Amino acid sequence: MLVTDMLKSSYYIFLFIIFAVSASISLAEETVVEFPITDTAQIITQSGVEIDRSNETGGSGLLLIDAGEPMTVELFELDEQDFGSRRLTYRAQIRSQDLTATEDSRGISYLELLAKFPDGEELVSRGPRVPVSGTQDWTAAKAVLYLDKEGAPESVKLNLVVEGRGKVWIDDIKLEAIPLRIDYLFWGHIVVWVVLIIYIYSLLRKNRQLKRELETV
Image (cartoon, rainbow, N blue to C red; front, top):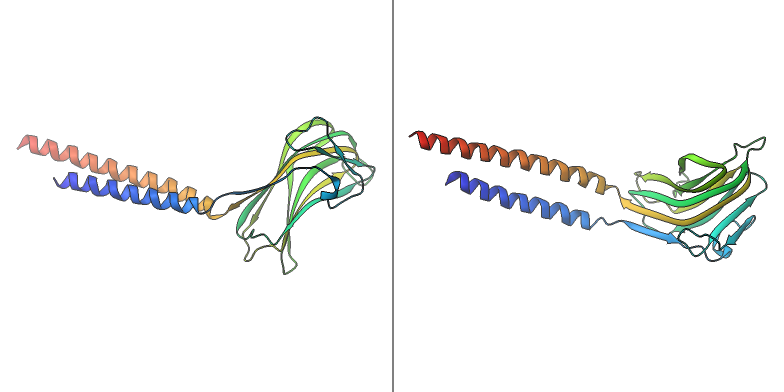
């Protein structure tokens, strides 16, 4: 009887913890901002950019950068957004054609994610780890930034850096924002499962041991 009551208590505790964790995770949902390319007027940098509507990978068109020299193309900027305590992931598809080095550049292209804070501090992330170069087919690229400092940034900027001469296309641009506490809840969820499994296993062992003792009486 005692063991049965303990198992019932464990079951209710288990349900409560799972409910609490699930509810907390649901309050920390991911935010995704997509940037379909329809017009160069959307782009901050106007020089050297044009719309290429052939072979798009998911957006309304491709943005083509025809770089005669190294340049940073400022694509989009978000302000008045609550990105405090977030993990930001800037994703896009990029490809290159005849992208070559110059005297002051390496002949590569990559994403750049930049967050600027009211105190003037800037945090920067670049990706992918292996940038596109030469002539390269569509490559999934991302840059990840952890905004764990106090306060939210006043602006977040999505750039494309071209270190060289040649053509670079970019498409399917998006920014994902996930509250950092999701990571903590995930590992907390794992720990809860492990502890509960061990606890229930221990109760079952005690139950079997009690049955054996009763059989010997």
